[in-house]
Image (cartoon, rainbow, N blue to C red; front, side, top):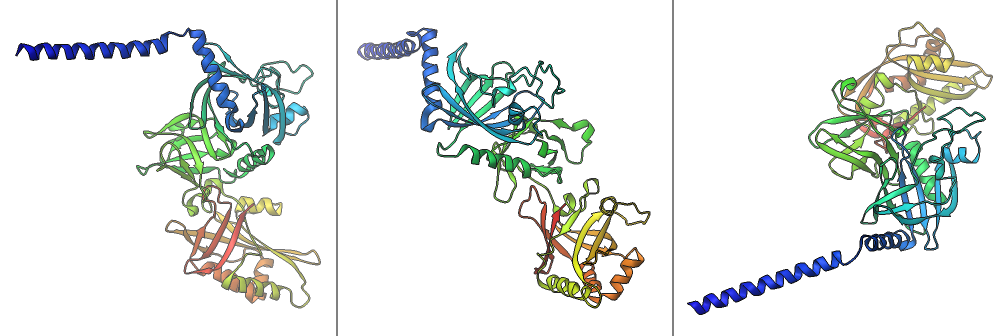
Length: 464
């Protein structure tokens, strides 16, 4: 028995020696280097990452907490040079103080280096006018008046960044002054900078359309959040069906090459959201939780019948199909008979206020919320407006009918009475249920409106 006890003790002693040896080797790996040596290793590590695989990166840059973000493309070379490309209004101001504020493309080469502070730091250490315009102390418009003495605070943006982490071709960085967390993502080195930036600008122009100011974030628990003014990239959010004055929050955003992101994570009813990826149908899917989507909501609620954000819709005169196409072409032929010579027939669906602005006047007629307008223009220059009040009735998610009233002007009523095909076209619009669809469910500014029971009979509405 004692022999076994001695043997067991020897085994435990051996294991203890081996464990102590492993710990010592790990301590040697960590502590046999000075802090400066470890910093130098980190410096080399991040320098290699930045120049690896062609060295091209997209930076989502935020100058401060009061404005939206800006996309830059950066190509880092091992010789210490970096080419920085961007497309925004301040690039135009950097070239000319009289710039009109439209996005302008610019590219310039300057110097970069990974330096050491309390950790590795990416420093853009020579002036690049298209990037350092955000850290310049000049009051670049529209932040200050365009005076002779333009010295001031400017955007107060960073040009040095703590390198925090690298994972999956993504660099996580933090501005040294502002401490704003940003990301850089690797880009194919064969990408043309201007083509890339033109695409980002085009997305910013159409992604969230200013004519559709409210869209909806749909949560897995069935709740929704309103996202308003996404086109400004400075959206506000609040929980749907709650008091927006009490629950509203404001955010800095950025439209990048692949979608949309917020500067800081946001807690939406217990779900963390920050980054959204664009889908083929125009919707956004949350990267953090793919069950969360963003779209414009039911089209009949958010688009055609939202009394708070009514728009003017123009009928695409070349897109009538099926029975609607036949009726429209017959109507044009009948208007063109006799002494009349037709130039064109414009058609609008709008609210009363929009119509009054359209014709350059005001009316005391009660048109309810909406009007349907046939603007008949003759070659001789005469113009006749057939103005019909419309009471839309919603049926289901994306279906509706239109109750169309009598023409409100004598001239318009006479035209309807003397052009049978015009009366038939109006009757068709008022007697059918229509189904609305849009290719882009986030920015539905072009709508297909078809008979609910006959998709081949359709028309197209385009937002004015």
